[in-house]
Image (cartoon, rainbow, N blue to C red; front, side, top):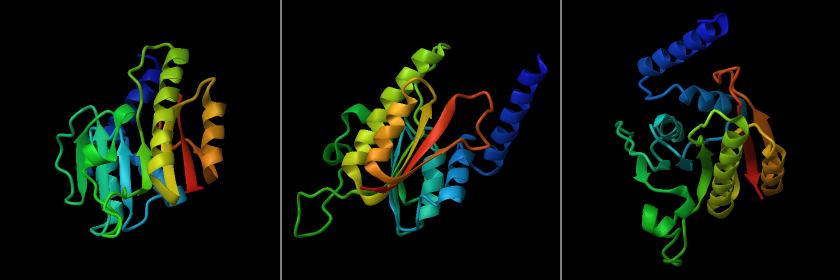
Length: 210
C-alpha cells in the first residue's frame, strides 16, 4: 500500500470510529458539523428537509440542532434503519418525483388555508451518484442530482431559507454555482476538512432564499 493510500485509510478509519463513538451511522456527519459551525445554517425550531438522508447521520444531527420545537424530514430511496430522534422522520422516496402532500402528508400553515403547503427553513442535500470511476461521468451525474435538489429548494424553501448541497467538481460546477447565486442572497463554496483531500466533492451553501 502506498503512503497516500495508507494515509487515506487512516483518515477514513479515524472518522468512522469517531462516528461510532458519537452514535452516528456515518462519518459524513462531521462535514455538516463543520458547515454549521462556519455558517450557522440550521437554527433552533427550524423545519428541515434532508434529501438523500440515508443512512441518517445528517438527519440525526439536524434533529438535535433544531431541538424539540423543530422538525426534520428526510427522504431517500434507501431505508433508514437507525433509530431517529422523536422530532425526525425518514421517508422512502425518489426526489425526482417528490410531492409534499402524498410523500410527507404535510398539512397547511394555518386553518384559514387548508390546502396550503408548509415550507421548509433549510434544505440539505448530501446526495452523490453511484460512481463509475470516470470523473466526467460522475460529475455529470452529480450535477443532475444537484439540479433536482435546487429545484426542490426553489419550490419548498421559505423566503430567507438556507440550502446546503454537495456537488462533484466538474465542467458543470460554474453553471450550478450561478443557479445557486441567482436564488439566494449569499452563497459560499466550502470544502470541509473532514472531506478526503483527493475527493472531488465540494459544498455550495445558499443563504437567504430570494
